[in-house]
Image 1 (tube, one colour):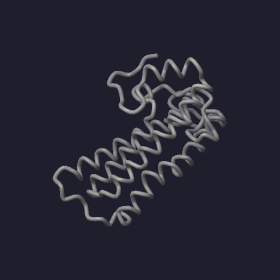
Image 2 (cartoon, rainbow, N blue to C red):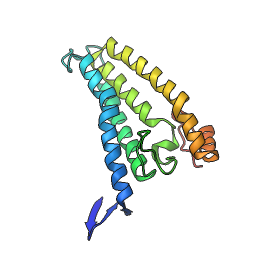
Image 3 (cartoon, rainbow, N blue to C red):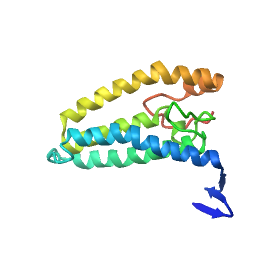
Image 4 (cartoon, rainbow, N blue to C red):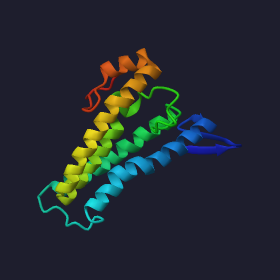
Length: 182
C-alpha cells in the first residue's frame, strides 16, 4: 500500500527515499528492456506475433498459461526485491547496495532467470512451438554462462563472505522447498 504525505512516501510501512525511487525506476526500465525482449518480444516474433495456432495437445495450453502467470509474478517479485531491499537494479550498471537474499531469493539464487526461462517454456507449451523451445535452450545456455562467468565472481568480490555463505546454502537454479534462514 502506498501513501503520500507531505513529500513522504511509504510502501508497506517503509519510508521510501530518493534512492528507492531511482532503484524502482531503473528496475522498471531494465524489466522492460531485458526480460521484455527475452521473454516477450522474441517469443512473440517466433510465434508469428502470437498468431501460431494454439496447442492442440491436451493440457499444454492450461499448463503453459499457469507457468507464464506464476513465473511473471515471481519475476515481478524478484525485481521489486532488488529495488526495495537492495536499493539498486538488476542491471550491472546500477547494482544493489546490499545483497538481496529475501523473499523468493531465500529459495533460489537466480529467480529472475528461472522465471524468464519458465515464461519462455510456458509460451512454447501454449503454442506447441519447437522454435520457442530451441530459443529457450539457447537463452538458458547464455544465462548460465553469464552467471558463471560474470555474476558469481562479481558478487563474490563485492559481498565476500556474505555471498559465499548464501551461495553455499541456496541453489542457483532449482529452488529449495524450505526457505533459507541465513
